[in-house]
Image 1 (tube, rainbow, N blue to C red):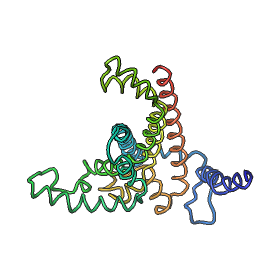
Image 2 (cartoon, helix red, strand yellow):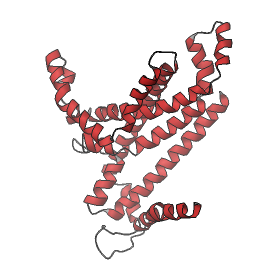
Image 3 (tube, one colour):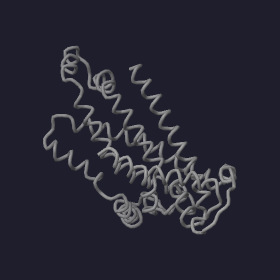
Image 4 (tube, helix red, strand yellow):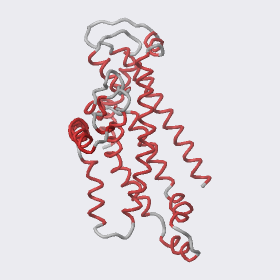
Length: 278
Protein backbone atom coordinates (compact mmCIF):
# COMPACT_ATOMS: atom_id res chain seq x y z
CA UNK A 1 0.00 0.00 0.00
CA UNK A 2 2.96 2.31 0.58
CA UNK A 3 4.35 2.24 -2.96
CA UNK A 4 1.11 3.35 -4.73
CA UNK A 5 0.73 6.17 -2.21
CA UNK A 6 4.31 7.32 -2.82
CA UNK A 7 3.81 7.14 -6.61
CA UNK A 8 0.55 9.11 -6.47
CA UNK A 9 2.15 11.74 -4.21
CA UNK A 10 5.12 12.03 -6.57
CA UNK A 11 2.94 12.31 -9.70
CA UNK A 12 0.39 14.81 -8.38
CA UNK A 13 2.53 16.78 -5.90
CA UNK A 14 6.28 16.44 -6.28
CA UNK A 15 6.46 16.42 -10.10
CA UNK A 16 4.27 19.57 -10.55
CA UNK A 17 6.36 21.33 -7.90
CA UNK A 18 9.57 20.45 -9.72
CA UNK A 19 7.98 21.59 -13.00
CA UNK A 20 7.18 24.95 -11.39
CA UNK A 21 10.80 25.36 -10.30
CA UNK A 22 11.94 24.47 -13.85
CA UNK A 23 9.62 27.00 -15.51
CA UNK A 24 10.72 29.72 -13.08
CA UNK A 25 13.98 29.87 -15.06
CA UNK A 26 12.16 30.42 -18.38
CA UNK A 27 9.95 33.07 -19.99
CA UNK A 28 7.01 30.73 -20.65
CA UNK A 29 3.62 32.47 -20.60
CA UNK A 30 1.66 29.30 -19.85
CA UNK A 31 0.18 28.87 -23.34
CA UNK A 32 2.94 29.06 -25.97
CA UNK A 33 4.55 25.92 -27.33
CA UNK A 34 8.03 27.36 -27.02
CA UNK A 35 9.99 29.22 -24.37
CA UNK A 36 13.52 30.41 -23.68
CA UNK A 37 15.69 30.04 -20.61
CA UNK A 38 16.26 33.39 -18.90
CA UNK A 39 18.33 32.23 -15.94
CA UNK A 40 17.67 34.21 -12.75
CA UNK A 41 15.99 37.19 -14.45
CA UNK A 42 12.54 36.36 -13.04
CA UNK A 43 13.97 36.26 -9.53
CA UNK A 44 15.86 39.52 -10.10
CA UNK A 45 12.75 41.37 -11.33
CA UNK A 46 10.67 40.04 -8.40
CA UNK A 47 12.74 42.05 -5.93
CA UNK A 48 12.04 45.24 -7.95
CA UNK A 49 8.30 44.66 -8.30
CA UNK A 50 6.35 47.08 -6.07
CA UNK A 51 3.15 45.03 -6.41
CA UNK A 52 4.93 41.96 -5.02
CA UNK A 53 6.27 43.93 -2.06
CA UNK A 54 2.81 45.36 -1.38
CA UNK A 55 1.30 41.86 -1.47
CA UNK A 56 3.91 40.63 1.00
CA UNK A 57 3.17 43.57 3.32
CA UNK A 58 -0.59 42.93 3.30
CA UNK A 59 -0.21 39.16 3.69
CA UNK A 60 2.16 39.36 6.68
CA UNK A 61 0.06 42.09 8.34
CA UNK A 62 -3.04 39.94 7.92
CA UNK A 63 -1.30 36.70 9.01
CA UNK A 64 0.29 38.11 12.18
CA UNK A 65 -2.89 39.83 13.42
CA UNK A 66 -5.08 36.82 12.57
CA UNK A 67 -2.71 34.30 14.18
CA UNK A 68 -2.64 36.22 17.47
CA UNK A 69 -6.42 36.74 17.54
CA UNK A 70 -7.24 33.15 16.63
CA UNK A 71 -5.02 31.68 19.32
CA UNK A 72 -6.21 34.05 22.06
CA UNK A 73 -9.90 33.51 21.24
CA UNK A 74 -9.56 29.75 20.65
CA UNK A 75 -7.77 29.22 23.95
CA UNK A 76 -10.39 31.28 25.84
CA UNK A 77 -13.25 29.36 24.20
CA UNK A 78 -11.58 26.00 24.84
CA UNK A 79 -11.08 26.80 28.52
CA UNK A 80 -14.74 27.81 28.78
CA UNK A 81 -15.92 24.66 27.04
CA UNK A 82 -13.69 22.53 29.27
CA UNK A 83 -15.47 23.75 32.42
CA UNK A 84 -18.38 21.87 34.02
CA UNK A 85 -21.23 23.62 32.22
CA UNK A 86 -24.64 22.52 30.99
CA UNK A 87 -25.03 21.53 27.32
CA UNK A 88 -21.23 21.26 26.99
CA UNK A 89 -21.38 18.92 23.97
CA UNK A 90 -23.98 21.12 22.26
CA UNK A 91 -21.79 24.21 22.58
CA UNK A 92 -18.75 22.26 21.35
CA UNK A 93 -20.69 21.27 18.23
CA UNK A 94 -21.86 24.86 17.69
CA UNK A 95 -18.33 26.27 17.98
CA UNK A 96 -17.01 23.65 15.53
CA UNK A 97 -19.69 24.38 12.92
CA UNK A 98 -17.78 27.16 11.07
CA UNK A 99 -14.99 24.67 10.30
CA UNK A 100 -17.28 22.48 8.16
CA UNK A 101 -18.65 25.39 6.11
CA UNK A 102 -17.17 26.28 2.75
CA UNK A 103 -14.76 29.20 2.93
CA UNK A 104 -16.24 30.78 -0.20
CA UNK A 105 -19.83 30.47 1.07
CA UNK A 106 -18.88 32.01 4.42
CA UNK A 107 -17.03 34.76 2.58
CA UNK A 108 -20.00 35.63 0.37
CA UNK A 109 -22.36 35.64 3.40
CA UNK A 110 -20.10 38.06 5.28
CA UNK A 111 -19.70 40.11 2.11
CA UNK A 112 -23.47 40.60 2.07
CA UNK A 113 -23.50 41.46 5.80
CA UNK A 114 -20.69 44.02 5.44
CA UNK A 115 -22.26 45.59 2.34
CA UNK A 116 -25.95 45.66 3.35
CA UNK A 117 -26.78 44.73 6.96
CA UNK A 118 -24.08 46.53 8.96
CA UNK A 119 -24.42 49.89 7.10
CA UNK A 120 -28.19 49.74 7.70
CA UNK A 121 -27.68 49.18 11.43
CA UNK A 122 -25.03 51.89 11.49
CA UNK A 123 -27.42 54.45 9.97
CA UNK A 124 -30.28 53.53 12.33
CA UNK A 125 -28.05 53.61 15.41
CA UNK A 126 -26.21 56.75 14.27
CA UNK A 127 -22.81 55.00 14.33
CA UNK A 128 -20.77 56.53 11.52
CA UNK A 129 -18.07 53.81 11.60
CA UNK A 130 -20.71 51.19 10.67
CA UNK A 131 -22.54 53.32 8.11
CA UNK A 132 -20.25 52.41 5.22
CA UNK A 133 -19.06 49.11 3.78
CA UNK A 134 -15.58 48.59 5.23
CA UNK A 135 -14.74 46.25 2.34
CA UNK A 136 -14.91 49.29 0.05
CA UNK A 137 -12.29 51.16 2.08
CA UNK A 138 -8.60 50.85 1.15
CA UNK A 139 -7.74 51.53 4.80
CA UNK A 140 -10.13 49.11 6.53
CA UNK A 141 -10.93 46.34 4.04
CA UNK A 142 -8.24 44.10 5.54
CA UNK A 143 -10.04 44.27 8.91
CA UNK A 144 -13.14 42.71 7.33
CA UNK A 145 -11.02 39.84 5.97
CA UNK A 146 -9.42 39.34 9.40
CA UNK A 147 -12.86 39.15 11.06
CA UNK A 148 -14.08 36.44 8.68
CA UNK A 149 -10.84 34.44 8.72
CA UNK A 150 -10.58 34.50 12.52
CA UNK A 151 -14.27 33.58 12.98
CA UNK A 152 -13.87 30.50 10.81
CA UNK A 153 -10.38 29.45 11.96
CA UNK A 154 -11.26 29.53 15.67
CA UNK A 155 -13.23 26.29 15.34
CA UNK A 156 -10.29 24.05 14.43
CA UNK A 157 -7.89 25.67 16.88
CA UNK A 158 -10.45 25.37 19.69
CA UNK A 159 -10.64 21.61 19.10
CA UNK A 160 -6.85 21.31 19.35
CA UNK A 161 -6.76 23.33 22.58
CA UNK A 162 -9.62 21.23 24.00
CA UNK A 163 -7.59 18.10 23.25
CA UNK A 164 -4.65 19.64 25.07
CA UNK A 165 -6.73 20.56 28.09
CA UNK A 166 -7.87 16.93 28.41
CA UNK A 167 -4.22 15.93 29.01
CA UNK A 168 -3.80 18.12 32.12
CA UNK A 169 -4.07 15.91 35.26
CA UNK A 170 -6.91 17.04 37.54
CA UNK A 171 -4.68 16.22 40.56
CA UNK A 172 -2.62 19.31 39.79
CA UNK A 173 -5.67 21.58 40.11
CA UNK A 174 -6.73 19.79 43.31
CA UNK A 175 -3.28 20.35 44.83
CA UNK A 176 -3.22 24.01 43.78
CA UNK A 177 -6.70 24.59 45.23
CA UNK A 178 -5.43 23.33 48.58
CA UNK A 179 -2.70 25.98 48.37
CA UNK A 180 -5.33 28.64 47.66
CA UNK A 181 -4.27 29.33 44.05
CA UNK A 182 -6.51 31.62 41.98
CA UNK A 183 -7.89 30.85 38.50
CA UNK A 184 -5.24 33.05 36.90
CA UNK A 185 -2.43 31.33 38.86
CA UNK A 186 -3.79 27.93 37.80
CA UNK A 187 -3.76 29.04 34.17
CA UNK A 188 -0.30 30.63 34.32
CA UNK A 189 1.54 27.93 36.28
CA UNK A 190 -0.38 24.75 35.36
CA UNK A 191 -2.64 24.99 32.31
CA UNK A 192 -0.51 26.98 29.89
CA UNK A 193 2.79 25.14 30.57
CA UNK A 194 1.02 21.77 30.24
CA UNK A 195 -0.56 22.63 26.88
CA UNK A 196 2.54 24.38 25.51
CA UNK A 197 3.03 21.74 22.73
CA UNK A 198 -0.55 22.37 21.55
CA UNK A 199 0.12 26.11 21.59
CA UNK A 200 3.15 25.53 19.36
CA UNK A 201 1.13 23.44 16.89
CA UNK A 202 -1.69 25.97 16.75
CA UNK A 203 0.66 28.93 16.24
CA UNK A 204 2.58 27.23 13.42
CA UNK A 205 -0.52 25.90 11.62
CA UNK A 206 -2.43 29.18 11.97
CA UNK A 207 0.49 31.28 10.69
CA UNK A 208 1.09 28.93 7.75
CA UNK A 209 -2.59 28.87 6.78
CA UNK A 210 -3.00 32.64 7.04
CA UNK A 211 0.14 33.26 4.98
CA UNK A 212 -1.52 31.21 2.24
CA UNK A 213 -4.82 33.15 2.45
CA UNK A 214 -6.72 33.08 -0.85
CA UNK A 215 -10.40 32.06 -0.61
CA UNK A 216 -11.46 34.72 1.91
CA UNK A 217 -9.83 37.47 -0.15
CA UNK A 218 -11.50 36.28 -3.36
CA UNK A 219 -14.94 36.06 -1.73
CA UNK A 220 -14.77 39.37 0.13
CA UNK A 221 -12.78 41.87 -1.91
CA UNK A 222 -11.20 40.12 -4.90
CA UNK A 223 -7.96 41.82 -3.82
CA UNK A 224 -9.43 45.34 -3.91
CA UNK A 225 -10.11 48.17 -3.56
CA UNK A 226 -7.31 48.55 -6.11
CA UNK A 227 -4.66 46.15 -4.81
CA UNK A 228 -5.19 47.00 -1.13
CA UNK A 229 -6.02 43.43 -0.05
CA UNK A 230 -4.18 41.42 -2.70
CA UNK A 231 -2.43 38.54 -0.93
CA UNK A 232 0.62 36.80 -2.34
CA UNK A 233 -1.41 33.73 -3.31
CA UNK A 234 -3.95 35.86 -5.17
CA UNK A 235 -1.17 37.89 -6.82
CA UNK A 236 0.46 34.66 -8.06
CA UNK A 237 -2.90 33.34 -9.32
CA UNK A 238 -3.85 36.54 -11.13
CA UNK A 239 -0.45 36.99 -12.74
CA UNK A 240 0.16 33.34 -13.55
CA UNK A 241 -3.23 32.28 -14.90
CA UNK A 242 -4.74 35.55 -16.12
CA UNK A 243 -1.78 37.79 -16.84
CA UNK A 244 0.43 35.53 -18.97
CA UNK A 245 3.21 35.58 -16.35
CA UNK A 246 3.38 31.86 -15.65
CA UNK A 247 7.16 31.64 -15.41
CA UNK A 248 7.49 34.92 -13.50
CA UNK A 249 4.87 33.88 -10.95
CA UNK A 250 6.44 30.42 -10.71
CA UNK A 251 9.57 32.18 -9.48
CA UNK A 252 7.35 34.14 -7.07
CA UNK A 253 5.90 30.83 -5.82
CA UNK A 254 9.35 29.36 -5.24
CA UNK A 255 10.43 32.39 -3.23
CA UNK A 256 7.21 32.35 -1.22
CA UNK A 257 7.55 28.63 -0.49
CA UNK A 258 11.02 29.32 0.96
CA UNK A 259 9.66 32.24 3.00
CA UNK A 260 6.81 30.16 4.50
CA UNK A 261 9.18 27.29 5.26
CA UNK A 262 11.64 29.66 6.96
CA UNK A 263 8.89 31.29 9.04
CA UNK A 264 7.53 27.88 10.13
CA UNK A 265 10.98 26.57 11.10
CA UNK A 266 11.74 29.77 13.04
CA UNK A 267 8.41 29.49 14.87
CA UNK A 268 8.99 25.84 15.78
CA UNK A 269 12.55 26.51 17.01
CA UNK A 270 11.48 29.51 19.11
CA UNK A 271 8.33 27.95 20.59
CA UNK A 272 9.98 24.59 21.34
CA UNK A 273 12.79 26.40 23.17
CA UNK A 274 10.12 28.25 25.12
CA UNK A 275 8.45 24.93 26.02
CA UNK A 276 11.73 23.75 27.60
CA UNK A 277 12.11 27.02 29.53
CA UNK A 278 8.60 26.68 30.93
